Image 1: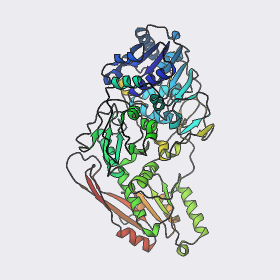
Image 2: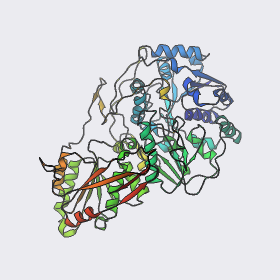
Image 3: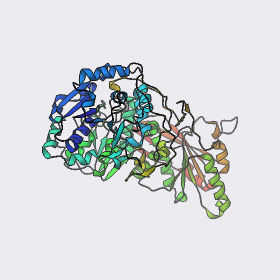
Length: 592
């Protein structure tokens, strides 16, 4: 017998496809989370694919480490009329749910399905998403090695290689591409799958269409409901201004996008995005997502994919400032071909604006420390005299307290802050050894550049139903931390970077331009003891005007960018620069 454990719609689809492709004809039981049935027309119709469907009563299980094991064991005995040892193979999707602890306590080996496309290579991302909903579940999952598959009772981690940021030289990793496997199913099986989800082919896709995959940020406590709406409004304005919009809501996204995007086409029905390749009679030109893992699974069918990145919900409020900063640079002939250094910025957002909003290439150099930048500036000045050569450098500096995850995405991010929590009766594995960046790691096939940080919450995966068993929230840690053998969190070693912005400006050359985003009320931009800007500093004001009264969720208050240069010609061009943009979806007109 074969046992499958699933929580989300995507995981149910994955179990169906895996059973049809790998265990067809074998007696199989689907163990489905009880709270998941709310999204199905009739979950019993899954018996068209499995011999039995059993509802696991997660709603009755607490988050108390002293009682979890007993509660899960009792729930299993009441739910499944077979001893756990009777199953030849056990496949567990959403392995961070507590059924895995029952298997570990009984020393039952099992196969783990990754939670969504590309997420196996980003355990830190998965941990943070779970933690923001159910903190204790995240700590237990990390303690027992259920996020990255390192628990000794996990036989293998079934994942889609093509969506990973990197591939680890680990025999546990097994490649399984659910979208490719769907296309290999028989027409009759595909018909039954579409009938279960109550789906009909999606026809009449217009030219130049963009398919938007929303996510349930508000339900996962990642953003407020208003911010979630504002994210899609400004993204349509900056990245998809002239395209016909088609919106595919996340299965657990309850926002009504009809009044917000009255001209957009909404795809009705609750289903995983991985079915799109067999639903669309014509593939839209563009897909858009913030960082949906489902889009990573199907991105090969689109001509263009726009992915904002995992940091975007934290940084999108500054998207207009990023846009105006890049536009100022791109429209000045005096800065043509100049390298653009960045520090503290959301790299993925900046690159998306350059490529998809301005359709301009920049020589972007993403620095990890201001002191490194100061050294580069001094070395560059020693090699040349700017006044003679006319060579310039440009810097864009965002709030220096923001640490982008961009530089964490090409390595195994196991060294993040977490608290060791042991469940009574379940022996935990030894703490994972520290893994240095690049150790036993090879590049994945076509991970993408900006896409590298995009394998977060799936369209219907990656903690998509964590709210079903418990609720709660916890603040995010600003920086990753290293866990000692005792399990306490400590700050990681970082390159020394005590250089202040004022010191950095002293190192800038006369012909250089430095742009500080959101600098208001920061003393480093003013003369000591006065309200006057320091010499060389130019306030660039961003004025905003509301175009309507309703559905305006993006911040409508004025902003300021501070430009710094000691070059008279460049200073004059910055002072005279004017630009305007209409954000019709966000309901704002902005100009500098």
